[in-house]
Amino acid sequence: MADMEKTAETVAIPSPASLDITSGSIRKRNKLVSLLKGRVTDPNEYGKELFEQALQYDEAQLERDAVKVRRKIDFLILPLMCGTYMMSFLDKQTLNYSNTYGLQADTNMKGDDYSWVASALNFGWLLAAYPWNFALQRYPIGRLIGCMLFIWGIVCMLQAAVFNFSGFFAIRFFLGALEACISPAFILLTSMFWTHKEQSLRASFWLACNGFSSIIGALLAYGSGHVTNLAIPNWKLIYIIVGCMTICWGFVILYLLPDGPHNAKQLNEYERQVAVWRVSSNRIGLKHKEIKLYQIKEACMDPKVYLILLMGAAVGILNGGVVNFTSALIKGFGFAPLQASLMQTPGGAFEIIGCILFGYISVCRKNMLGITIILSCLPGLAGLIGILTIPESQRYALVGMAWMQNVLGSPIILNWTQPGLNIAGHTKRTATIGMYFVFYCAGNIAGPHLFLSDEVPRYPTAIKGLIGAYCALIFFQVIYTTLCSLENKRRDKAGLHVDEKEEEREGFDDLTDWENKHFRYVV
Image 1 (cartoon, rainbow, N blue to C red):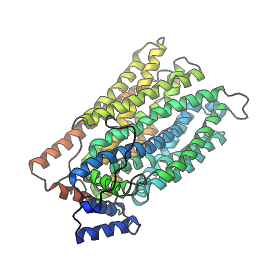
Image 2 (image 1 turned 135 degrees about the vertical axis):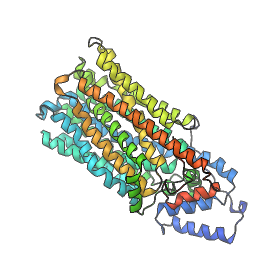
Image 3 (image 1 turned 45 degrees about the horizontal axis):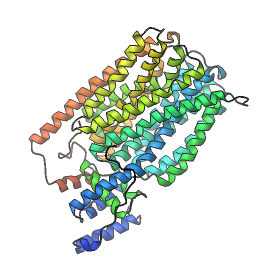
Image 4 (image 1 turned 90 degrees about the horizontal axis):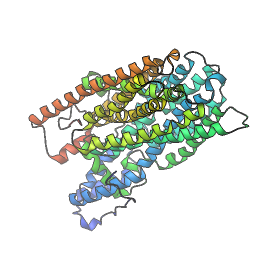
């Protein structure tokens, strides 16, 4: 991030003498103290009080301190999210790496058994996605994620104990059900800690850690393949190592990851006020614990929500295919198992660079998010066409085309940010994100089944299917961006504006984007 500095700065709490203290502000401060002591637990009410308290300070001072608070959040909270997402993806990728070392032979998998095991995680995610989203609305996000890290670390290690297809399918199913909370939780956290303008870049940073995960996982798999005289097959060692790493990281997250700016241990009282004041411009408040049924109904009636769901299915198909069959593709180009593991590491670099580059493009100018999603689809499309057309004798060129599939992380994460940016009303946003991940998981289930075992090494049916998914994603994104732009222009033309502070206060009233006419969509 261009505006980041190497150290986080602490913002000093201004002296009360610098403020015009009235009886009203004293009452507000007393109420805030009560909130800080835990007497009021609703994050949105808490956030509203922090926002009102922040308004007692000079705006110019808040603007200056907001920069310092943002840097502190970037350096102290964003790395926690990045590390957690890296571990989450590493857990998923263990299947891909272990497949190189005889997993299918040792577990007697035949035909499409491996494809079903690859899909099992997404079956678990599919069934758990919607319940997790409502749990995240009602309960503390940081503690939920910390507890889940312990449990799924244990489940990850249990994969080393199975010996047949059915056992593997069951373990992967429960792993997916546990990990279903991570992506929606991070979408919510990103919307609470950063402004609309900042969110797509920060989200790109934590998803770019999939690239680091790919590199670390490939090196772990390569190292595991060199270990000899083991009492267990080499592919089982991968699950034990990654599971232990996940459990250790759980201690860090349980202690340090906050539920939002209102209770971040990394910030003092004044910094929390500034952090909430910063994101008040999003017009969505923080997190409201009450579930409102009318907002669920509105989500089901909103045509833009259905476009988001269709895009979720498209990126799910792409992700399901790319994540689970990268090693099979590279191995099919004529490389030995150890070579195939090592050859996956550059793909992680492609993902890191792609996510950060396109994340930066999405915020470098206003109204660039939709265009950037479309542009970020082009490298993957080019790589798929290359896999279909380049002669098999040019195996290194074919591997390069496989590496380009890792840029898929960018359109995925930029697409994920749209519900958090453009859906107001906490229950409506929760319902939309829940439905989105149901469609995304369904796509992940379908993706691996495009790869037919008798079409090695090019898998033409799968490659054509993935090209179609990219084209569908671009088509739906064009329609979605157009609808949001037209609605913004209609509201601007109608003069739907009031005082800026009143618009920011409205964000804490839990209004939906349909109800709040001062809300503007990010395009």
